[in-house]
Length: 273
Image 1: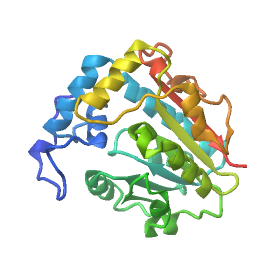
Image 2 (image 1 turned 135 degrees about the vertical axis):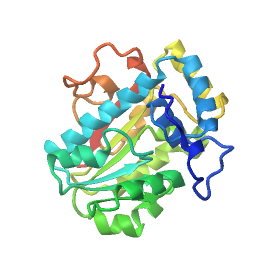
Image 3 (image 1 turned 60 degrees about the horizontal axis):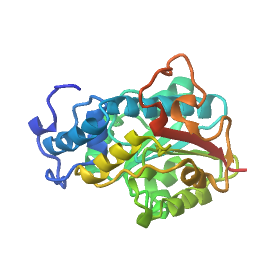
Image 4 (image 1 turned 45 degrees about the horizontal axis):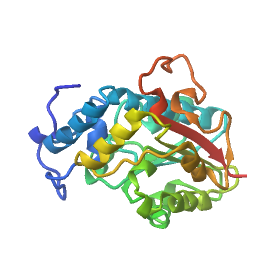
């Protein structure tokens, strides 16, 4: 992991509770970033204790997101993207991936963490095709009626919603299936939804890592079975190759063939007819 200075050395951002870990900051730390606090590093230690290759799990997710966004823009013709639970800016941001194919693609990042908002606005200050808003995936109606979403995303035309590494942070009591259904209901015909999440494929390490997420301080991180994850795509037509291990979804020459976390993450993209 990177030993670069973290946010402890920078002025505190308002409305941030430094005693509570953040999903976005823990993910940043796991990816080797520097936008995190001591509490986030403490929580991450439990994850690495359960699965030392946790960083590769995060990279597998980012690699799938890169391939999926490229496919959505290049092959499916999507020019509008809403990225739910986007997290902190990192290597291979969604708008950068999309703009490498077509600079006109419009992207709205949505996250609940105010640090994401602060960093995103600084990064996107001069970009009129991309913005970031504070939003909670548990309230999809509020996300889609936000002025920034309404100004950049024409929901009467095809668009894509990315829900990568977010629904597994909702407990069963929070009904992630209702969230997925709300996303699908917002899609216009010809639109797409991406769902990717931690996978319980009867592997002991999945159980161990789930315990580390749930009991190690973060309190979220539910590993769901294939059948449970298939439910996220109700009302959608799965794009080939369907719901698969993340690294098996349209792999390219940058996709690892020997990832030690290969069976811990599932991903798929669905299209609304």
